[in-house]
Image (cartoon, rainbow, N blue to C red; front, side, top):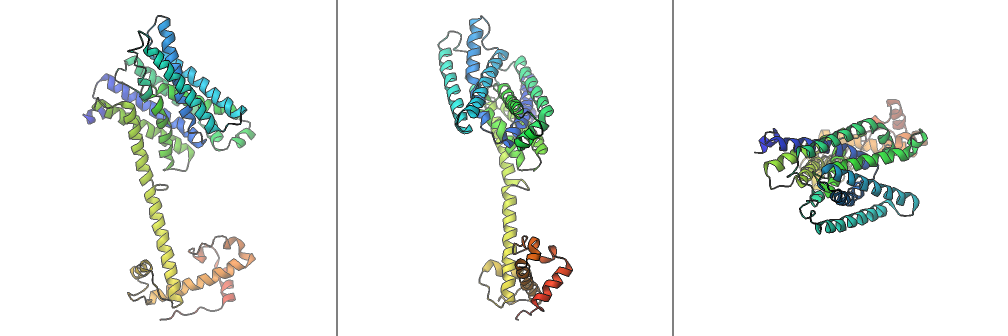
Length: 401
């Protein structure tokens, strides 16, 4: 069943939902990257919660005008207007009051969401509101999605993605260094507003699939996941889009193969699965890579200290140090240095004395700054410089047998 879903063999509606979710995931991941780099991840939370009053008011207006209150285009238009008002309120609070951004986000989020819940309660008392299904906008629902609904979501996601590609360079510059962007003559305030507008667009488009509560996860988790794999901003945007699109497609496929599973939460859980894999296995910033780096560093420290102890005829009490020396063929089981161990120990002790001279001489100030207790001095000084240092410390000393 899942294989058929992944191969788009479960019917026309399931295929449309999968394509729409994929485009939404790509747009959400790419857009959320700029919020993540700008350190404004929680702004998406305020924008998403600000859409609820617009959905409810749009439903009420359409019913009062004699239309179908469940028309998706009308509901999305209302949510967009409401989200834009919430975004302007947030911007005004941050710029014209002494409230910090997190406090302003909390205020806008709670007030708009509370107002939306009140309107939902009012709608439930209306004759046409009991079966409206507006609560599906909280967590998302694709069970009753029509072809027109899926096309609206797909087209909205595609247009948003095209705008992201067009504006990616100025938004990246503003996200990293707004002061430099301002000095370059870029309209930072307008670019910031455009960035928030794209987040609002993704939020509005994603209401039907993942809901206003879970869309925040689809905006933030893919960029965080992508950040584990690269240091380049353009690749972060690309990988975030890939992770978001993959999460949307796989989540929609899993939901279609098991009809009792809601699409939005499954998409978010798939996205979280990608995050977990990246957290553990990413080669540069993952937990496993960090653990391996720590173990390698620990091994180098123990070997260095063991060699210095051998060079000075001191007993080695640390079991790990002795085990590493034995494994490297530098010491016997009783802690006595082998021939190779004595040579390496003498070199380690001499390097320590060389570093002592380098760190106490102003002429070697740049080289001294690189000292970490483990670095080979040959990687820092030239042969002539090392020979000059050796003349200052005298000839090498042997290692006691």
